[in-house]
Image (cartoon, rainbow over all chains, first blue to last red; front, side, top):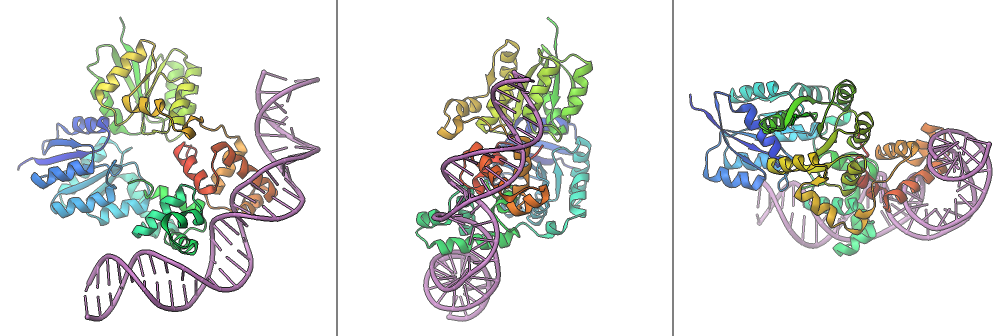
Length: 211
Length: 211
DNA sequence: CAAAAAATACCAGAAAACCAGTAGAAAAAA
DNA sequence: TTTTTTCTACTGGTTTTCTGGTATTTTTTG
């Protein structure tokens, strides 16, 4: 049985180092590299085979949920295990939807990581204990997936988050303030929130506020 | 020369493992433990000597800025090096204000970490390169430190972030809505923002939204 | 104990957000 | 090409926020 070619994707050298070390004695893995950006990984995967990726979703260039999809597009058999800080159910679900074979929180033990790697290699979907809790007992509003936003909605969300009024946004985009109000309302419906405070919180928690 | 007794504080076992490994060959350090919570560390430090702490400020129980102060109170000679994700200038300044001897971002290299440890041991304040940039070139609004909020202001900020209107908050706290409006205005003045969208963004960025 | 800070509350009004619905044009996807 | 989605815009109104100022009481700090 050949070793699985494994990459670690995290913009924190400390984490890469830690995972390399923790896994270097795994008989069935061969760590072939660490990558700090999504683009570096994608470049690599286009030219080289990878069997397993340990992926942090908070990268400086590409949103990790999107990156899962992109990886699968480049190499459908590559197994993706997400190792993340994010406890938001909708984020967890979207990584799995986009092709990840597992999700662990970074506060998981090294043991749990080993176990999930084994499970994923066997073709199963694997979650660390805490993630299972999050998924299994959704509160009512957590049943909702992460909203899909249009390009314009994302743009307007970002401008709202900068504190700009509908009037100012309208001027910047050469639109009517009424149009901006409509986008605002659409955003609030998609996030199921009732005012901008809630909107900004939800958008931050669900990783809409950074690349 | 004795080895410095060193602890790593991070709720991510992966990070603790990585740092332990990276630093285990440092001739002048002896890693005595890893702690996942601020309280665990404080309990330990009350009974044992620690010379150096590598501290992540995002812990599940105590805000890392406050924890710096608490550590210094328990053991004033203990050197604290912050290892963090947070790039907000006001957060950086507050950790130093509260007694830290250095601040590195987690995307710093292991080399930079080693260098900062040496500097801190020598009595200097040390920042990783990226942190120096952040500190050296403050934009106008970054010159402002992290606002000090009263107990009531923190409470009301949290309720606003839940999407509650001034009327609802007033009812919950048995106050006049006018009082809530005043607290709102005080919050906005302290954060130097002009509406609640900006307020929530700033509060999130400056680590006011979690313990 | 005195001073300072925090908490509470008010006035009056303008600005902005929120709401529910509708509809046509343009762009993207099938 | 057709269908679907997105974008743009409007009506009419209510609710809420924001603004600048003032003042008293209570609590905390020195």
